[in-house]
Length: 102
Image (cartoon, rainbow, N blue to C red; front, side, top):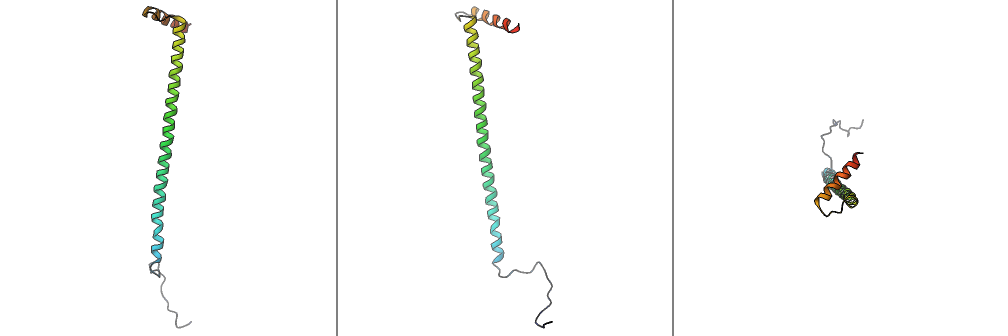
């Protein structure tokens, strides 16, 4: 064995030389935080858009159902009553309900 080799114990606590190398590895922390924040913002934005589309679809379906109900009511009133008095409307409603029961 050469006399210049010195038997040193191996340790994970030994300093890395040059000293600027550890700072290079720490920059990834900022990038990870930025990537996490970006993913969260994109996810929240996507969820908000989908929720808004869902609400618009529900509103549109409710409006369509209301319009269909109104058209059906108008058709029934046109068929059974002339809408000139309350008595004729009540008679029309009773006739319609009797027809629905049979």
